[in-house]
Image (tube, rainbow, N blue to C red; front, side, top):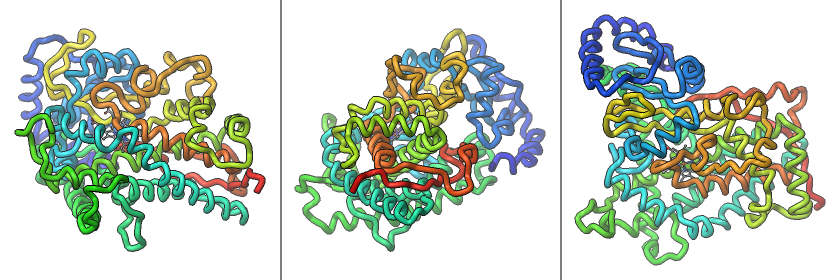
Length: 507
Ligand code: HEM
């Protein structure tokens, strides 16, 4: 969107900055380690930036069909490698993971995470390793997931009650809105440690903007000479947003500090845990490592909220939309739920492992709609030759998971169809071992919140489909449910999904 509006400016810049391009490209090709991967011819200075369009993952899928699964383009001054097959993804995320496990330094990372104090947008290195370990050991472990069970049960129960009231009145439900509110409440209670108050700023709207800004193709990142002009106004918006987020987080941290018992509580939320680590070495084994300060606490909370809120909502929204569009799948899923659970109680977390069709439905949903269509961009840390192609140091790597999920050679002719049965006798792993399906990434940068994410997606979907039949709003046909996408660091539905619930239980 931003790029389209800026096309004329970019074209003018082509001429004036042409000489710089010649200098940079000469430097790149002089390494003589072999040929860069093939790619379309770009323009001087802007490279292929102007070609990305509104949905870059779709544009690049189209181009990869012409130039191959390892394709090279140039986004401004940044060499960018687009990876679009399971075999190529395995080369980048497993064989050469040690080279590609970094993240590019971007304006968004600088503003939202003080450069590199958190995990998601932090370059590879000791700091990233230490903070990621802190996440895994203290925040995303099994006992924390179990500890939050009562919160999940209560919040999901509340949603079911609300939808039940709508069902009694035969009302249309905005499922997207309900999901976003559910996860906002879950994030408030699990990560920030308290329920959302009416006077709290709407975290979900701020996070939505943060993820969208962090995923935008920011001209300042690709043509750094133009950064001071802030042509898209992104710098200004990110600064304002960070300020608003700081106000919320500061308030929440202060509330926790006043509680005094946060260090001794058994059921610590994430803020309690982080505050109890204040002034300690970030790496307990290395007393000389960085000391955790209040700034760390803020950016880690920001990272956690950003990484968990939108991903889960968007995943469920997509899969729910597919189920609604495919009554055959909804019926089969309800039959499974009825066989395993019956019709007189809610789904329990202990039921989930028995719901094999639900698992297939989720895999199929994430195949067609990976919420991170390029994962989070990776960056190469050294010059390397992959599959005969020269990949220069500091190249940006986009793993086009969206394209892999829709590749006919991988999935067969019915690739566009929502058909969960394709996973029936195929033991395809979703956690990063099978490069056909990597919605959580793979290797060193794989999503550390995956278990929490999968649990939430399973539980919410199971509960919504078990408790209600869902039908189309009056006057709408199944074909009217659009599947339009909105691009950002995560890709969600462009429009909300609506449906009418009919309560299924006997009470
Ligand atoms: C359905 C839900 C989720 C999906 C689909 C998802 C997907 C992803 C993806 C694709 C990546 C990037 C992997 C890469 O670049 O190679 C990622 C990274 C990450 N995710 Fe998730 N995620 C989900 C839920 C969560 C949750 C609940 C949390 C935490 C509470 C979380 C925390 C993170 C973090 C911290 C990273 C950055 C890892 C790093 O850079 O080292 N995610 N996630």
